[in-house]
Image (cartoon, rainbow, N blue to C red; front, side, top):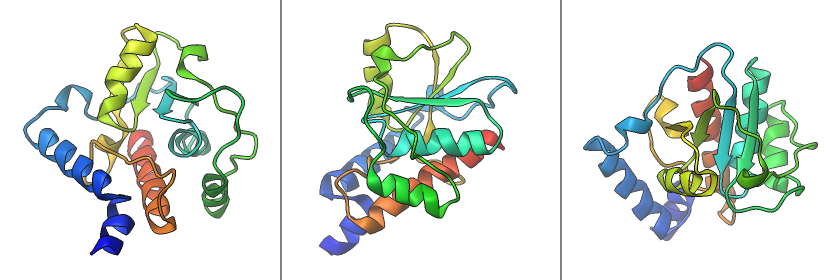
Length: 178
């Protein structure tokens, strides 16, 4: 049972967070942050916690699909490389994170027209607190075929779940760029 939880949800906490956010979404709790169609020339800015796994992958994948994209993190320093597993996953997808350097959300230069794409519902509040600006915010998982409001942070998870999370990020980007 534990193995199934770790491979599908990352941890017991991840399982609880997944179902909590899924239920909250079912009753419309995240409808304000659901998928919207980005304008043709609108820059996509992907935001996650550390800017080393989810958001850099989303950025390079969106760029490979012809979109202007950038990424930053809520809880990171500036100038660090992407996670080694994220770099390896990206290479397997024909993408490269070799030049990626982390950028903290406080140091990122946003544009008023940016579509800010966060990975978890908690990122919405954290983003607003750190930027104190009113940007258009959406949840990345709302663009998946089966919408999920919560794309778990794969850092410190088993290999199977890491891959699962990164695949979900790519699915979300395909939905945004469709």
